[in-house]
Image: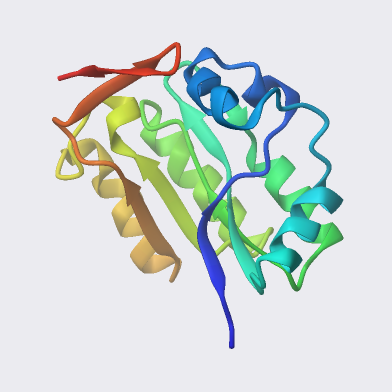
Length: 160
């Protein structure tokens, strides 16, 4: 049986330092030095065949870059499928970045976490990216529902 984890991030040090993950640390303890090999070992234990490995952009910064995701895919090409993330407030730069990720890196999807950007998935700002997904034959992930939560600070969601 093939099992694909459709929503996976391999965290870097900067990602793990973000206060919005503090609640996760209460469950699992401190998170540091998570190697790519450890991630693959956990996948093996759970019998996960492949992971849709996601980059992570949010307003003002990159938490996990597309290049970091590509590097992981190069090490484990049979285990990871690339999912791009772009700066949604610079949409045409985002279209070019998505195009590069699909054409040069072989990524298969774009991820948009709409609550991070405080824009619903129907916002016109996304249309050029949606069109590029269609033209570039890549998929699209959207995460969360707009209006339920706006932003997570210090591990606690602030209600909209």
